[in-house]
Amino acid sequence: MVIVSRMISIGIITSSLIIGCISFLIFSDLKKEEKKAQIETLTSQLINFIIYLWLGKILLNITLFVRDPLAVLAYPANSDAFYLATLFTVITVIYQSYRKRLNILAFSEGIIHVILVGLFFYEFIQMIFEGNPYSFGYIVLVFCLLIVFFFIRGWTNSFTLVITILIGWTIGLLLLNLLYPFVTLFGYLIETWFIIAFFITCLLILIINERKRIS
Picture: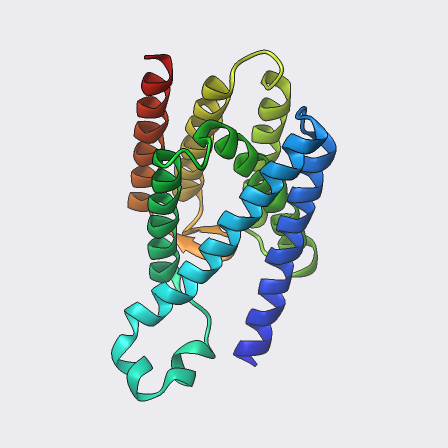
């Protein structure tokens, strides 16, 4: 029953992210060829994240995995595996940027678009069909961020846009953390320290990248 429930949850997450990608293709200001290239990059990193999620689950349960692999693989990853997957993904993005294989600002703007739209639909489904009482606050936060994202996108550069959304998202999550007993991201429990650490890491990466670009 737990496995079936988790498979349904994975299906909802996947569907939400697909909607996010479709939204990017429809509403992005990029040219057709650039949209295609960006979608390929975003999809590649999302696949990497899923692989890292499984890897994180195995690493955190390595002893049990050696004895009984199915006991680990059959059950969903927890928040610790989510944190590890995020760390590995950030390292991958930094490495690919260093090797000139990825434009961090373009990637950041694209992934923010996909995740925000995906989160909106995910939390909407959770509220309507699952009766999740904590989804409403998240929907309001994501809706406000989407309005800001689409409103200022044509009036500012990618660096300012990404920084603005990151700050708004971080402040919003911290406020939700005060209002609700817990905060989740696509069903994974998110601790306060992770929110702050993720924000600081992204901020430093973007600032360093911007300084290198200008110089």
